[in-house]
Each structure stands twice: as C-alpha cells, then as structure tokens.
Length: 446
Image (cartoon, rainbow, N blue to C red):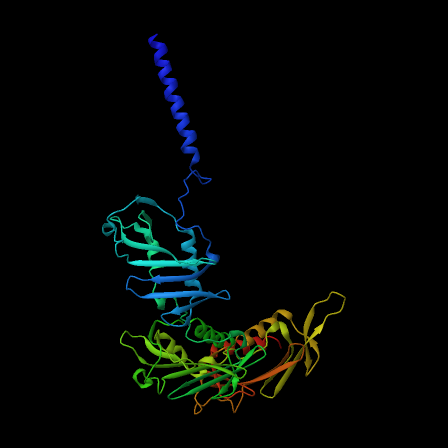
C-alpha cells in the first residue's frame, strides 16, 4: 500500500509539472535559438512615425516633423534635420525592448530618477492625436540599463543603457550639419580666393582645367576630392543662427572663400578666424548663421594652383597611342601602330621615318611605358634655367584613334631634367634618372 501511495504522489507531481509546462512555458515566445523574445515598449513601425519630440538632459526641447518623406526641425528653430540621426532615433523607438520590469506600480519614482525624468522622447504615428512619451531616468547600479516608464503609467522597466546617446539628443545633434548645399553632379567650376592668391578651375565634359592664375590641365582626382570634402564637411558647432556683426568672427574679410558653380548657380563657403576651441568660424554665404568647422579644411582650401595641376607629363598611354615622333638632336624618328596581316593579327609598331622597318615590340612597349610614366616632381620658377631653349628631346604623340595629340619638350641642366607641354605655362621638374632611362630605352630601339 505504501508503494502504491508513493507512486500516486509521483504521478500527481509529474502531472503538475506537465501542466505547468503546457500552460506557462508553452505560452512564452521564443526565438529559433530558444531565447525568449523581450516585449517591445511600443507597437509601432518606424516608417509610421510622423512627429518626434525630444527633451534632452539639458532641458532643451526639439520638435521634428516629417514632410514629404523628409524630416524637418520645427522647434526651437526651423531647419532641415539630419535624416540619418532622426531615422536612427525612430528605428530605436520602434524596436525598443523592455529588458526587465522593475516595479509594476511604482509609488516612489524618485528612486529611479523618474520623478523628474532626465530625457523625454515622444512621438506620434500617422493618425495619432497625442504623443506617446518614453521617460528615461537614472542608470542602474551596474550601469548596463536605464530606468524608464511611459507617461501616465506607473510601471517602471529597464531599457539598454547604450540607447541613452540615441535618445538624449540636442537640436544641434538632430539638425542637418552640412556646411554647404550644392548638387555635386552639376558642379562645373571651382573658385578659391584667399587674401594673397586666387585659384579657378573649370570643367569641360569630364576633364578639369586650371584657368587662373595659369591655364593648365588639372588633376581630376584632386579637384573632385576637394569638392567631395566640401560636400561631406560638417559643422562642429552652431555659433549663432543670425550674425549681427561678421567682423566678430573674421568673416567680414574671410581668410578663404570657396565658391562652387553649377551653371549660373553659386554656393560659397567663407572661413574666418580661429574660435577659442581651435576650430574656425565659417558661414554659407547664402545663410545668416555662423558655425564652426575643423581647422584642417582651411589648409586644403589654401593649396596653391600647382597642387591642382596634373602631374603626368603625358596624357596618352601606350595602349591608345597611334603615332609617336621623337626628335633628338638632328634626328627625328616616327613610329606608327599598324594592323598585322591576317584576320586575327594583333596591332604592331613600325618605324615609318626616316626609314620604314619593323621594331621589336617588347622594346617599343618598354620605351612607351618609361615615357608615359614620367611625372612632375615640382614646378620650376620662371627664373629657373631649364635648358628648354636647347631641347635634348622632343616627343609628340597622336592618340585616341588620332583624335588627340600632344607635344612635350625636354631640357637638362646639370643633373636636373625639365619638361614643358605645348599650350601649358611653366616647366615641370622631372626625375632625371627616369628621364635617362627613357633615353636608354630609345637608344635600344635603333
């Protein structure tokens, strides 16, 4: 009988355990990995949020509104918002999870820092009459979570502490901090003016050229890099929404002005004197505000015209050349690329003047490679003796199916070598060893 009673007790316990598992544990939502899904604070999707309000720990209140799919700050100022910043905020509101409920009906909110919440984030979804508010208090003792509650509710719960920087945002944090507004794809001119010099560049098709203080080819990557820098540069701080006296910031006579042109439209950044924190005062000439920018941008805008010049001595490349003429002393050699015989024959180089003959393809390729690899090391001053009045070599090339041509004259003075392109001002100083290698490769073709 005792054994029967023991067995009966075990059956009852087992039945109770099974019932608990069925009625309690089976009701908990689990992830595929078996982890319980934490409940969300709000039942909203980020794309449905149309209005946002943020009261930061400093007490500053910012109100934003989505208009035609774009976020705008409407208080405390009217301004475009940083779309990425606001999207991050709304996404985190929509996915915010309760880590743990601390108190279902809290009567002493002060102990959680929620009697006077440090941060108040509110939102309205499309169709909502009132804002939904998340109130954030102190951090927990371990610092891993934040105490929080919903407005008009006594339940206190925990949210992850890393979200504090997402929700505790000032108006400046949430505003668009772009320093200059322009359409990069349409920019066709750049003008840089400082107190002692001026640089102007113009774009024709896909090529940039210097137009002031000299006319010369410009380096595409350098010019586009400058435009990209101006496009992505951000305000470090907002000094004033409307400057009463530009002289206070050194903006009555800017240290540097950078103007980007797009047809008849202009966008101008003006940079003034240094701010107390080491940044620089600046303004978009089309807006009344004054802001600060990082000091490094000034150095980039104060580059000389030489910094924007194309450093390649030759524009053509071995693969697109059609004809090469080389004059050295009293001798002139001319080479042309011709089609080999046979249906699938490759193109090859032939000397066509002063005599017609085949040339060694490998040696011709080496010569052209060394010639087109010549690069400018620096630009010689006008008073420099370059030897270009007594050329040691003149090279002319036709390329791009004969549509383009260029001519470069080379001079030497002692151990220094120089090059000058037709139609461009100034002489380029080049590596004399590399130039000597060009002459050796030319000799090897004879």
